[in-house]
Length: 322
Image 1 (spheres, rainbow, N blue to C red):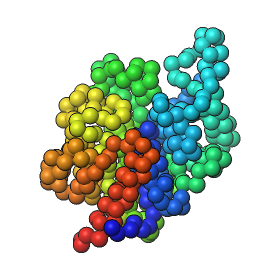
Image 2 (spheres, rainbow, N blue to C red):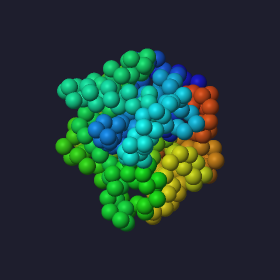
Image 3 (tube, rainbow, N blue to C red):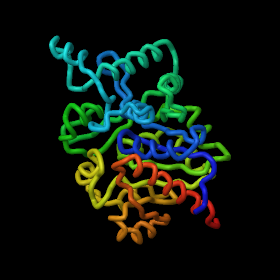
């Protein structure tokens, strides 16, 4: 087995992506990993700037995440929410007491003029995280889900309405005037870059907002490293979240091959679960290499094993003749 060398940039949404990001963080030296995180899910709520995917990555890499729910902090208390409900406040979005502290401190620092990248770096450092967790942009980009009943802010669709409305499309409001975070471009331009990994996050609402930031996709395409995506679909099912529901409503076949087709032209390699081995030739016909392995990450060992497989795949792709 060839040993991976160089740095790795990972693109991630929340829970699903955080699992692989954790595996990568256990496999690589901290200075060799930069996780670029979707901020399209961010929103303003109760006067606070809330960044769900950034926080999921932060809590996961800090060992503070609630592994049962997939979101929030473990051992959380709910005094604030109980008091808010008693006052008749807006309580559809759950904010635990420890989680609330993150949002209050972030909002304070943003109001004082710091960038989201700077605030994120400071908060992650305080929690002992050495890996770089970087927002895709310091500018506000907000995902809206187009539905049969009109456009919904993402958290209204996802949390308040429990993904019930029928999806017809997506909007990334503000993206046209956004720019990538400077650290994002620096990581992608690093001559030591050995792999760009698209984590198994929802392609429509977690990865597409990242790729929509002007200049970011071009920077990935120009990077001197293979781009590898890991399928979030196994056996026609989403491991987490509403990916397959969205596919059905958008008229897209529920399969790993559909995700590969979604990324066609950007990626060099695609990772599928052993359950989907029969789709390998269909995916190769799209012009990309395929790795078949276990992609269902139920344990820390699964996360680390998949990370090692992905990095080994990158090493193989780098050694291929042009």
